[in-house]
Length: 278
Ligand code: ZN
Image (cartoon, rainbow, N blue to C red; front, side, top):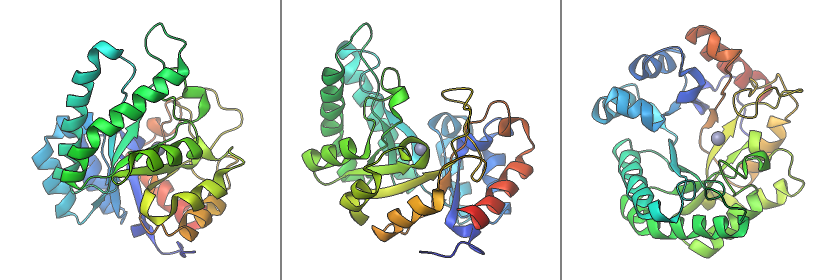
């Protein structure tokens, strides 16, 4: 396992972690100033900053774009809008390419509006990914399927486990990949085996945060690494044993805590926790 003690460069910070504390140009500059090695922008942040300006700033600081958040959401607008959703996804692939990003984060989408057909939603996600793959392969941008915690199955993603993500990758072939997020997957008794099954080729992103007890909001109460119950180091060990050698990305949505603190405090704490508890 890699020694993180003096390895802040192996940390990336997701743009959402400090999204309330500055515009995207300020966020890029602050992340670089803390000696952090990478950044993962959200598409609204790229739009606000301007794609070219964001690409220039990220490259100018020598930061790695660990992923672009996010695309997918194939089901939420129903089958009538499926083609429009695919077009939007292709634009997201182009943005990831412009940043030389390691991947595009794919969140499947939940149930179609008014539907209880979970299996149908899952097959629509598979169809969406398959339709995008030629464009993604041409752009050399892996489509990183990020399984989300099952509590999001209805509204955000019906892809909820590493096994599902691996099965999708088996079915879809080259260009389909996986983002492992400890927040979404830590509970899974099959996690170690499925990480091993995914291996170096498929695991293109590793997201870290912590699970607070109690969790007070399904979306916006993620914990800082070390403040919750996830054995992050253990899971990182599995991911690295599988061959992952990329940056670990701190992705913390925290409406009542970290989003209310100064950007420098949040980034400094990310580095301090990354180098001591992850
Ligand atoms: Zn994530």
